[in-house]
Structure formats: C-alpha cells, structure tokens
Amino acid sequence: MYFKIILLLVFIPLPVNSATNDFDLICNYFEKLDKTLLKKKMTKSQKADFISKLVKDNLDVNSSARKTWEVVLYAVPVERYSMVQSTATELLKTRWQCEVMEKHISMTGE
Amino acid sequence: MNKFAEKIERNQNLISSINQPLAVIGLDKIGQKVAGKLLTPAVWAANYTVNGKMPDKVDIGLFGTGLLGGTAGPASIVTGVVKAVVDDNMEQKLKVVRNSEKPEFRQYIKATYHFSSAPAAINAMTIASMGGTAWQHSNGLWVYITDKNNLLVPNFQPQKYLKIYRPVWPLQSMGAGKFRFTGK
Image 1: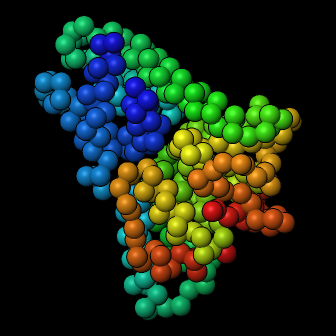
Image 2 (image 1 turned 45 degrees about the vertical axis):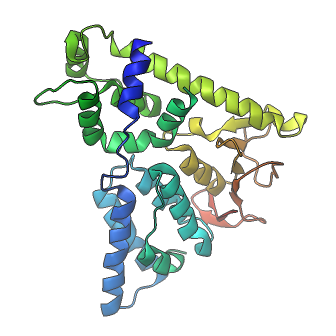
C-alpha cells in the first residue's frame, strides 16, 4: 500500500500540459513547410518527405507524436488532421490543435 | 485505483519523454529534495510497462537507500504492483467490451495496449494500416479483433464503439504491407 500511495502522489500532478510536446514540434515543422511553400512548389510526396525528415532528425523513435505521424500518412488524406488532433488530445489530455497542419496535411503524402 | 491505472495507460510515452519535470514534481510532493540525478519510481514503472526497461543500478541504489523515506523496497516490487494494477484494470474493461459483442467473436477481441509499445490509440491506427479493425469502446478501451489464426480482420463491425479505425474497403495497398485506412 505504501508504494501505491507514493505512486499516486507522483502521478496526480502529471505536468503533461506544461512541457513542450512532440506534437507541437510537428506543428512547428508544418510552419516551416508553410514558409517553404511560399518560395517553391512541392509535390505531395516532397511535402511528406520534408516533414518526415524533420521528424526523424529531431524526435525519438519512441515518441508518440513520431509514431502518429508515421502511421497517419496511410490514412485517408482528408481525415489525417482529425486523427492527429484526436490522438494528441487523448494523450495530452488537453485540446490540441494546429491550424497550419490542418491547412496542409491532407495535401501532404499520397 | 482505476483512474491511476488509466493515467499510466494513456500517458506512458509522454511520461517517458518528459520524465524530468515529472521527477521534480514527484519528489517535491513527497517532501524530498536531491541534487543531481532526479528520479521517481513512477517513471521506472511507466518505462517498464511500456518497454520492459528496468531502472539502472544508480536508480535502484538511490531508491533503496532512503531517497523515498527509507522504507521503500526494490524497484521490481513497485513495477510489479503498477503492472498488476494496469493489467487488472484492462482485463475488467476487456470483459465489458467482449460482452458487448456476439459470443462467437468474444475470444478474438484483444486490447491494442499489448500490440506494441506505442499508446493504445496509436496502435489502433497501426492495426488499421495493417489491414485490421480497431475500435474504442465506450469504456475507453481500445481493442482489435483477429480470426482464429491470429490474422487481423479488415471488415469487422463492432456493435458498440466510440471511434473505429479500419482499412478502406476494398483494400487499397499503400506498399510495404500497409493499407489506406479510415476513421469514424
């Protein structure tokens, strides 16, 4: 019982909302994509490669956001944003959104 | 205790990725301060339930020599307790999910939690991308179904669900054993 009490105390204040999370980082990568698209045209595959390279270079292989990104590319394009949003919201326990991702993700990847 | 178990299930990877602030708060809460390496058994427990990763010798040494008040036991006891609580909570929910479906399907319904080390919701999408049906029951548990040969079932229609992921039918191959999937 002593262990359970300690663990409860540790878990109650879970600060998941206060830390910069990996979903926000992917949102930042879409900001970069958005700016890059002002300068040059990119195909859907090139856009996906652009984001995927940043994800691979910066996020741990065990990152939930990275895993979400890697699988959501197989989803029906128009449903991708809502899938990322609902997954992030479920894991972060706070409503997560990223307007620039919503703008581009359905046209990113095949 | 169920809420505690759910916190672990839902936050497992986040806990692992942001263990530093979690450790600081955890130690403050129990009135302990320590310079240098900060840790909590909760982080170990989360790592253990996700990856099977045990704390290193330094962690065990600090924990066992009184960092948490001197009465704490080996880390393996903590991880065992946590894992048992999580497993028990999930088993209870899985029973409810199975009972919502037709008897002939019940034994083939499994929790996505055990599919890989990713959180259950991500596993559900992964299962759908591999040609299976995964859904979230109204009790919050993510599950999927296989046939008697342990193969994923692409077009299963659960009777009760909040959210469902499955491949587009007819199947659309995306290469590398993956399929286009949809969610509702």
